[in-house]
Amino acid sequence: MTAAAEVRTTASWRGLPRRLRTTIASTWRRSLQVRTVFITIGLSTLAILVIGLYISFSVASNLFQDQRSRVLEVSNNATTAAQLILDSSDAADRGSLQLLMKATIDTVTSIAGTNDIAIFRAPDQPTSNNAPPDRLSPDLAGVISPALRAQVQEHPENQYWQSVALENSSGGTNPGIVVGSGLQVPAGAGRYELYLGYNLSEAQQTLAFMQVTGTVGAIALIALLSAITLVVVRGVIEPIRTTASTSRRLAAGDLGVRIPARGEDELASLAASFNGMADSLQARIRELAELSVMQQRFVSDVSHELRTPLTTIRLAGDVLYGQREDFAGPTARTVELLHTQTERFERLLGDLLEISRYDAGSVTLATEPTNLVHLAGDVIEEMHGLARERGSELRLEAPGGHLDAEVDPRRVRRIVTNLLGNAIEHGEGRPIVVAVDSNASAIALSVRDYGLGMTTEAAERVFDRFWRADPSRVRTIGGTGLGLAISLEDAVAHGGHLDVWSHPGQGSVFRLTLPRSARAGLDPNAAAVSPLPLEPGDPEAAGPPPTASVGAILPDDDREVHDA
Image (cartoon, rainbow, N blue to C red; front, side):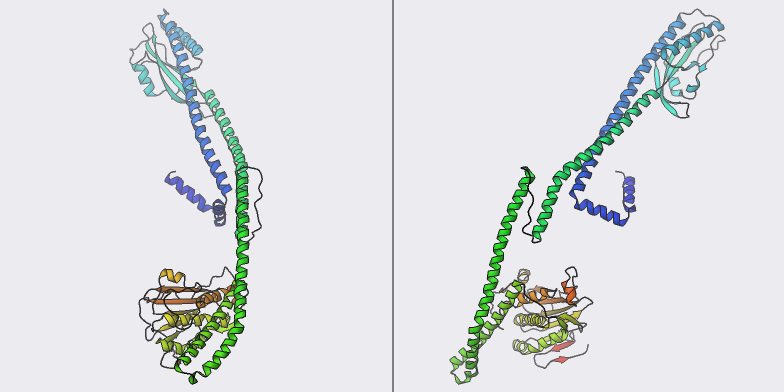
């Protein structure tokens, strides 16, 4: 394809309406049937076009060669007969030579089968009063080229021909051939040039009829091929389309759907194999679902059953813990250890119950307008003592987050508590920054520490249940190993998401993003864009700038709030 053709094609495509172009492109991408039919028709049309052009040119060439051979043969016969007549004549004066030339011309036209004749006396002959005058048919006027005459004058004993265009009665032209040769006229008249014109319009009409017939046949063949291709492709594509539709329904959870199997061919074998796979998948999923329900019920039942003895142990432990000062040193430390582990066991039971509710899909949110800045400040104040023990400074940054959002405050408070506790435990006594910000569609809270950090592999598993980046590291603040997993479930239940950024030696950032309204959280197509970046702008910093915060909680002071 030339550059000009490519430009025209592009311009034609761009000239279509945008919606039509989109529809065509979408249909081409999505429909195997459309692509197969159009590609088959296109290649078939190209093959028929190439074959038709080859046949047309071959027929035209053979037809012209046949006509040329015939014309040269009859022209040679006519020239030979004319020369015999001239050689056998004894004409000596002007009148007899003219009669002789007329008889010669009649013989030539009779044998040659054409009235288009021209006779010219050679220009190099001496002047003679007896020489017959030249003769030129109107159809050959302006047709005989100087090159043809020069060849005939140079070699009069030979025969030469030339393709020409002869005018017809309608003002157009017909293809033709002019054949030239030499004649020797007696009585001193000298050498003459003889030119015979042949009209090939009948041959052209025959060729045109053949081309029209071939074109009609090609169109009929293309239409027939299109119909055959459509029928064959439909017969093959329809089972594939049924298989694709069935697989989509199966993937969507409709485990009872099957492909109708008919016949004994490859497509029927495919349908039988697919149905067998679907049966196995349905049975396996049913087993897994029953196992999951049993596991959820077991965890829930165990957690509930453990609450009664745990309450008893807790009450007895509280009594002993209240009298620990009356006990000896080892006994007092044992009572304190019993009290601490009982509280941790109680929290673990609570987390297990919460996880079982999420697994069972029985969690409902009690949403209400909540200011995330005030909620984060309350959590920071509650954990102020723990942060002071670990030597961490807690800072609250809220440049634009003083707007309410429809959330479940209990669950969001639990998320913030888990994130802050995780940061205190792994912050290595360095400052911890809690940031809150919002935009038109979402509100976000991030917790950044400047502690140990995690590798990429560890960050990908940080929300797994009971998973620890360092198995040898002991939980020093009494975590259960389910805090981040529950936090992720709480975020997803709100229609939001919980992300993490971490790098070894540079700390970690946990970012909670929630939709501003509960209705937006229920829309799967409304993805909330977080107003806070996940990766910090100063990943290699050892701590926040001294003036970076709007509000701060310091380990040696009470809570203070400063204006920016």
